[in-house]
Image (cartoon, rainbow, N blue to C red; front, side, top):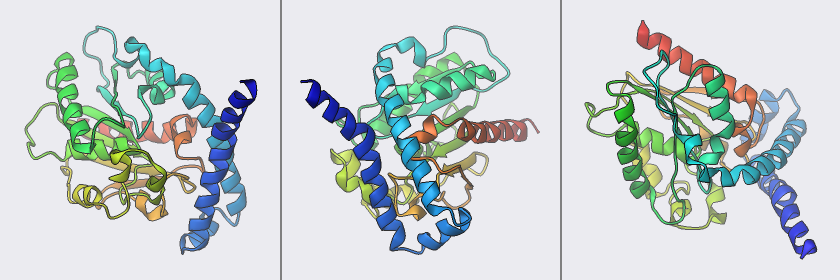
Length: 286
């Protein structure tokens, strides 16, 4: 029993990161991104990939260890309180994760004064994209009763970013609450080849060129919404790398070389997100 348990841990914490980065390097080595990665890394491609592997090992440990925190509901909705000077923040996790993905972001946001942080939870196996989007819409309508008339900030990781874009691009522009800003982390706007290893129809719908990806590419967000796509140069779950580039008209920002899941636990990446939030709030006030 101990041997089996140890084997499972080795597979999750070591084999998975190595396997995904082997695939990342194979994909990179056979495309023009090989030269681009060498350029942006200053010739330190191998070092950057090793940093990605290391961050993947650590982030998998954190992600799996914190997964049960989804059961503590009070962590994912703020307590009662009046209106503050900071806007409400909505967090949307990615495929196969749950709201525990945001344990660090929730803490960091609260430390800098964002006390109204809400995390949306969904099941990656029992619903398709449109069913989850409908649940997101209903859930935001419900929680927005606590902040009537206020605009929201939405932060989405991976698939959560696609949900955020689809929500903000809905046809009814006058529907409350309004969206002040969208910030996405490692979102596969062009789909990903890695979904061939995924389980369930939701994963399959995210392949490059799939009907859902083409549908989402046609969605446009209002010019009044500040939209930014953050992405890692060594993302091990979304490739080709061009799939991470933001939609037309969006801002883009490259992070330090961390893995796909590691963006959720990486302090410098959070600081980039925070700057985007503050810039959106400043522009809105101006």
